[in-house]
Image (tube, rainbow, N blue to C red; front, side):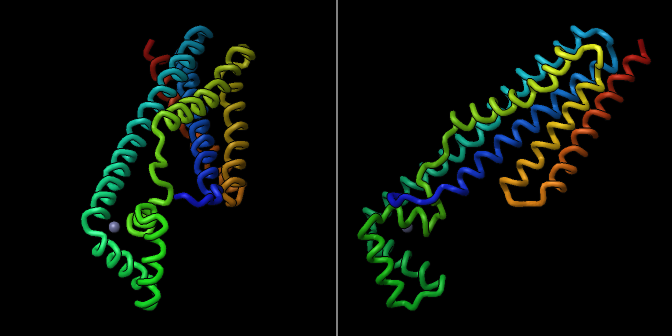
Length: 228
Ligand SMILES: [Zn+2]
């Protein structure tokens, strides 16, 4: 696209991904630490579990995001090349194809032909990418950026339960769980605000899943405590 367009939806997508990454970081790291705390009273074990969870989680987020965005970028690039080739090899067919698309969307045939002709004269490739393939921003997928953003937001979330365990060691699991639930509540409200949904529902949903994850890992950990 050559035209400047408002990137509001793009920014929302990015913010939403960051909030979700932080949610993941809080829930999985806090659960891991609470689970280890249920099996062992050693503060060192709990902190090691948190640090390992942060590193493993951030890298697994980065890997997943990199792979998924890369394959999206490959697909977009292949579509772009195919479209570019078709436009040079058979411009008449491509013009008719675009005209048919506009007719299907409700334009009169003569108007559709005029619109197709004028848009193709301006930027044929961008027009086909947008109206035929539905790709509004040509090659918008950025794998490395996406990987860093996911890993970073996960790590930010994971630092929270970790810092709680380091700063308030005497309070143990309760401090980790409490601080995590409070932050999840805040992030849930924030993500609802970004997306325009009701904040209370979003906060309750994410707190429910966070509490469930911590309760189940604590239960799993306490099995080992009984066994020893
Ligand atoms: Zn085409």
